[in-house]
Amino acid sequence: MEDYNKIIESLNVKLVKGKHIRILQSATVSNHYDTDNYVFLLHDGAISFGKEETTLEKGDILFVPSGKLTRIAFGLQPTKVIDNEEYITHRERYFEVVNDVEAVGRLENSFSYIGFEAKVFDSISFFNSLDIPPFVISGQHGLARMIRDVIVENINDTAGKNRVLRNKTEQVAIEIIRYILRENMFVEQLATNSTYFKDPRLIDIFNYIREQLGGDLSNKTLANVANVSEDYVGQYFKMLTGINPQDYIEYQRMEHAVMLLRTSKKSIREIGSEVGYKDTAYFCRRFKMMFGIPAGKMRRRDTMMSA
Image (cartoon, rainbow, N blue to C red):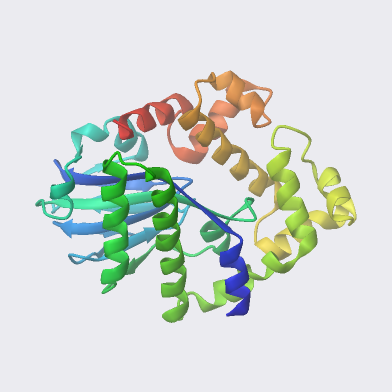
């Protein structure tokens, strides 16, 4: 438990979005994917997920770790099957954002959701690194109340809003970790994939990647950072994380690109260059391959979601 206390102490949690939603038209997103962690709290109606179509009950919470591709159905059957691009580009066809505090949790066919980052040492996407699948959290009224509190605070425009949101979102993330540990979930994954948080050489590599996303991140460079041989660094990285370093680097570059699309007015060319892609066309191909939509539509999605 002491190890997890240390991890939680180093955890940086940031709310990216939080909304109360009324379902206008039932839809199944065949390949839901995002770089943020998501929690969906079902108030009324239906949500199911995965190939087995696991169904949530009223008050249940679906947690989807960042970077996990999954099938999510919103609304009662039958539902229209759409891909992630349709879901993002034409979200208003299926969902209505409700900005009435009094309506949160009280509408028919409605749910609330939070998207958040959770990074260890400001470098490692915590839940993604554990390689755990989406799962349902049931009977956790306290956590459900925390999620509603985030939504209400996000709707209101009051003094100290950002500080309160940061604290409340951090509580949500910690409660999810506590639930996993309390229920003894994913024991093997946690035992295997949390060990590298204790390896200082690997932390040095993570920090270097974060600081040099637009620069040279070849295995030779990473080997110098970790003070190991170039031939060994790839094996060393994969042994501790389960993925090879270049795949991890691409994920971090794309995650940063999404952040720039959300928070800046830089062109696609500028963003691609900033995250290490000299060829804009190649950057756009890789972006669409990873997220299922073009970079420009990702920007359009976040403009719509902030409305």
